[in-house]
Length: 107
Picture 1 (tube, rainbow, N blue to C red):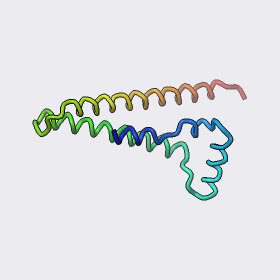
Picture 2: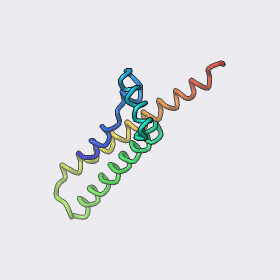
Picture 3: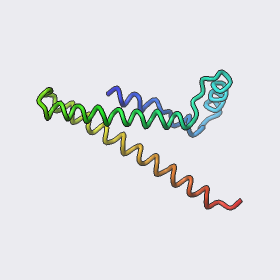
Picture 4: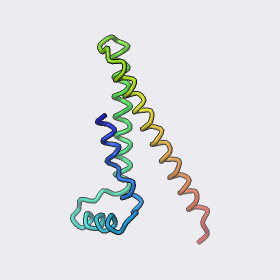
């Protein structure tokens, strides 16, 4: 479950700039040097997905080799890793669609 907490740390509202308060907070963070840019946020998200994939693979390996009898936990971790990977793919697809739409715009 700790990997989901890492994924939840990505604040979608902050990325969208949905409110003035989030914009002013991000500007304040930039002034103090604590700001994370979009690339860092996406990089952290990808690392969290990779970590969840590795954890799931390790738990499956432990089940196969007989080091663990907790099949339920392994299946839950595997499903969690699958869902986080699917979310990452969907985010990538949306970013690509946005980029292609920007390319089609006439200046």
